[in-house]
Image (cartoon, rainbow, N blue to C red; front, side):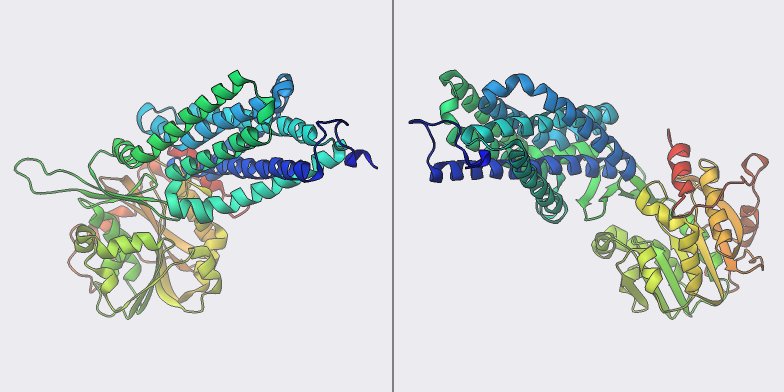
Length: 531
């Protein structure tokens, strides 16, 4: 008989084979479930930071780095509690369930009301990591109490269950919890599962290891945890509405969290004697347009690019339909292909009455074809050629969007541009973010285009810039089409002036952004800080 097969001790208390097999399986099941819950907590913190801050790589680095460090501290801190392993494990799981379950709610509150999101994130990640790190040493003690094994065998069993459980948590978070419950309620569900897994193991398999006092304290703690999680579940909707409204100046009239982002529409209350309301769209908290001045932005974006052939027009982004509205003002446009990642934005633009009035029911025009895909991926396989391309994509302030402002991306754009075609790229603010603006131009030029930079004043955004470009060395003429419709803002004189930059906002020599060196991401994060 090997050491791994030997029972802990001989005598009347020696566990029978069916019992220790069942007990051992229960411990490994608890390891499996707790590992899944722990990884969900990590992913929830990363995802929330990505939604609120927009820096997915930075948020992941902070959360994972702090939690892994804290797990090491937690493993050491668990040493004094090994002689009371059952009670300590149950208490840790209850604390983990409460903190992990309420983590999203607490961090959202810190962001909305207290402006303490950064410190709150680090503190939450540290405490969660501390508790998660204490689990394995205590579970190792409990596993050996059932039936002693060689250290290597016990470690292999525990870590196998732990890693497989982490896989389950990693898959369950994006594909099950987020679609079914959302972030806030999803964390509450995981907290409840975490509590059940820890308490059930101790109250069944290791009940005899608990003193009467410990049993009473754990029972009371379990009731308190489930009451807190239940109350948070019942009030989650009201909390989310209240916290979200705290972030926006005007009343929120629509809010949803799609697979890709948080979508919010706000509408101002008209001032006495004025019937003008301001409809605003926000994606992940970033303003996309204000109905009071969006025409300035979209006229400047679209019409210079259509001063030439325009039978086939490609619009990348612009799921709100406002850029498409401007393109459709030309009757000789045969087809407009819109490539936008998020179906939820386009669906909102199709059904919201105010947004439909603003975009002129652009998506109902038979000339419009909408494709939901990542623009970078779609361009790699695109077979069509387009006379004009309008690039109206979100700003490059996070990893997912920075790739859409690289040399590689504009090279793909060039490949689908017909002979004599023109492209226009929204490029941010040359005033607030000059390095970002000129880095975008550098990337366009590196991809084989000649550019004309220009900028206009959009009150909601400030000084906002664009780049008109054509392949080769011929400088494109910046002007309006000869058959341009009546425009509210843009005319020939305004467009000529738009190509002039003041002395304090002249060209900045910066390197182009590439997939491996996303300089524009660094510029966008630093330049917009504080605005």
